[in-house]
Structures are given as C-alpha cells and as structure tokens.
Image (cartoon, rainbow, N blue to C red):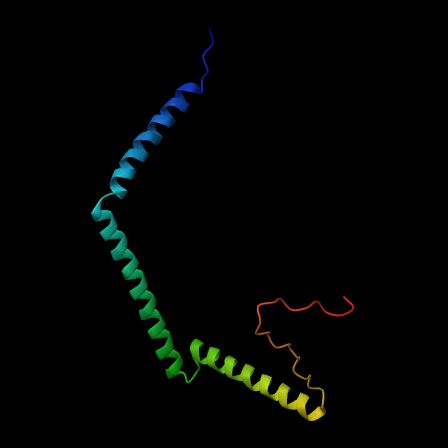
Length: 117
C-alpha cells in the first residue's frame, strides 16, 4: 500500500500550528502582554508628537507655514471665494431666488394631492 509522502509533513505542520496557536493564545491573554503593547503604543504616540513639534519648530525657524496654517489658510480662502461668488451673483442679477416651500398644515389631515398630478 502506497503512502502519501506529503502526509507526514501535513501532519507535522498541523501539530506545529496547534502548538504555536496554544502558546500564542496563552501569551496574548496575559496582562504583561497588554502592558507591553500599551507601552509600545504610548511610545509611538509620544514619538509622533515629538516629531511634529520638531517639524513645526524647524518650519518656524525657516519662516515657513506649518500644515495647520496651510489648512487654515485654505479654509479661509474657500470662505472668501464663496462670499465673492455670492456678491458677484447678486451684482449681475444671476442670483437664484430662494425656493418657495409650502408651509406645513396644522391639522391632522394629510395634505391634498397637487392639482394635475
């Protein structure tokens, strides 16, 4: 009877996966692992904040705007453009009138269907 030459390796791989999953699962359940992960994440956030501070100081020393200043300027320019478009439309008479909306009824009956509909 011929045996499958890969069966041994599949069996060994399956056993190795079970062992790794068992050990890994046990490690991930410990409080030490949580503390290590929390400390690592805190260090990453602090390093990122320090790098942002260094970058802002370097940009200020070079008399260049920071990312937040660019975002503020962009928003301000957008508001100015919107205001100018509105003024231009008003001056040229192309401003659209506000749509007329029917007022809600105060009764309990639903509104009557529109005529011709």
